[in-house]
Image 1 (tube, rainbow, N blue to C red):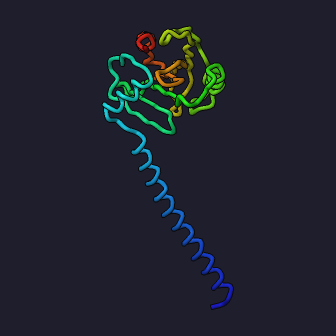
Image 2 (cartoon, helix red, strand yellow):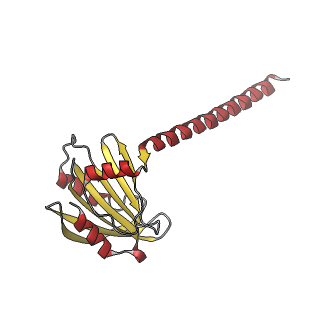
Image 3 (cartoon, rainbow, N blue to C red):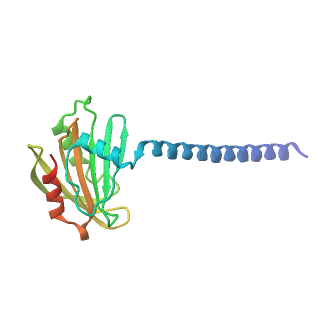
Length: 189
């Protein structure tokens, strides 16, 4: 066997070992991520109720099922999905230890329109609203989601029970129920 063939075989072997290590590492990495997600996301109704109550009290609209909750780095997120499996309600609260400037956060949220998985997102309406006795603005946006469907989103920032919070309702434009949105927003207390 010539020296050139030996070098080639060594290089091919090294590449194969490297590929195997990358695949094995990827499997371990994915498994670790999956484990971390299962430890962060919880669908226990008692936990969902406790976390949602720490954000804000509300009346969940008819047709929305049990929620999911995630708590990471002091942030709390509660998510509810409608029976159509496309309409969602999200409640997110920042940790009280963060001294967030509400107006700066609202400005960042407005700038974020168009920088997510949606395409051609535009603000279609800004509605004054009152959440927990606090005047705020419900920002209604429309865009195309990653599946190519028209979606609508309504978001508002408010003072939650334990920190600055955001409510977001999103769903397909064809099924948009503004009355449900208005009723839910009015129920936040």
